[in-house]
Figure 1 (cartoon, rainbow, N blue to C red):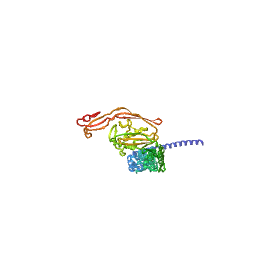
Figure 2 (tube, helix red, strand yellow; figure 1 turned 45 degrees about the vertical axis):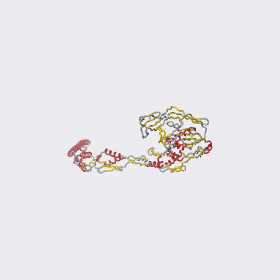
Figure 3 (tube, one colour; figure 1 turned 135 degrees about the vertical axis):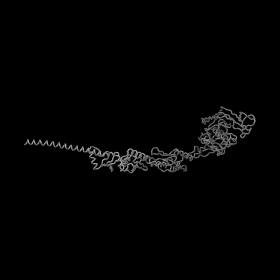
Figure 4 (cartoon, rainbow, N blue to C red; figure 1 turned 90 degrees about the horizontal axis):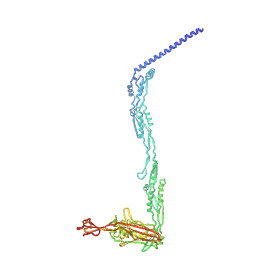
Length: 626
């Protein structure tokens, strides 16, 4: 049983092994046959449709089976809308920019779509190709439509649009066109970020529509650094100061500083962005108060002396009043500053201080019995056209007569006797101009006889002498080296002055007599003694007279004579004055120096037959001939 079983088992195993092998071989042969068939079929199918789209293929909705590359593109473009015919409009505020689709090359990705269509059924191995070809024939395959554009160009155009849409903010400013501060309002700016616009534009372009597209862009607002409100607050503050005039109460009077004047005292300055500083200038306020002070101040009147006949009597003293300029200016400034700070200030009251006289009536009364003539000087003259026939000497003398000079006060000749005008009683006379005589036509000519006379009276009274200048040449009716010329020419004025440096007031008396002028000074003697030395003279330059023949019958008749200039010797001089007090101490030790130029006299002679030729000058002495 066992042997039989072993024999049967062996035969069965061999039989099974050979059957399995036959099956494998048969399977492999089948596969090979299928593969060979597939290769043959794929090759034949591809050869049949070489360079053409296989059946069942579409590009989008367009069937393109059996078409070559060019035909496929033509079919697609014919059936589908033109993606480059529309435009993209960007809109922001009142600004619009248009980007045409053609400008950015918007189109179908024709190259990619054609490549995809022609590749269907031709990818992979033979089996893959057969499989895909069969599936395409049965089910069909559609190549998706792809939109493309020049992204870099689109980004460039949108960046340019964004840059053009940028508007810088404008700060509020303050100007002063008509004296008042006016605000130019601030303007907000805007900026545009191109990135979100580009993203929105790309989304709008990424479709198969050829219609126009509009994008409304919302900008980012840029606030100005200086707002209208900031500037307006500063301007309103400044304008409030000069919104109305300022009433000033002083010395029982009402004055008003008008708004225009106040406006000129203030200015608004931008010290930093959005920060204005209001300044109310103190200096012009101080000037205004100075003018007010000169108007409302009343100087105290010191007691003095006058004469009742030949008897000296007292003139009464009187209190004065004075405005404290510094305090007044500060009060006005504070009132205007209060306006700027929001407080109402319509008026200011300024206080006046009482000023008592330096020399009271009682003091003068106690000394009136001691008043004596301190000095006197007289100058003689010939009344002629050279001095307005005496008018230009009498007039200043009358104006000065009765003048009281208080202790410490300075007497100025022109301040009392001026102005030198016809309205003030002066007339034409002669004068020395540029060192030569002008014998007529000079307003006030000849008044130096008055000024020289008063100078000598004050000199001999022992007072502190001030302004003084000698004439260009020496005039012999005056003491040598002690003349005092007066001259006014435009802004230049040469005056004569002295200061009462005694403890008591003095009275100046001016006395006009025929052919003479006298000044006497009265006061309380303080024991001072005056010594005036004899004048020292040197560098003498004698003068002479020239005679000149002129042939001008209209000016000078033949044989006639006309004096043009007088002869004056030139020289240098000095005069010393010593004034001592009652205790012997020296009060003044003065030396008055004078430089007199030489002036050559000139007489014109009308030429006639027999005389030397016209223009001939003879000097010195009389001319020869007729």
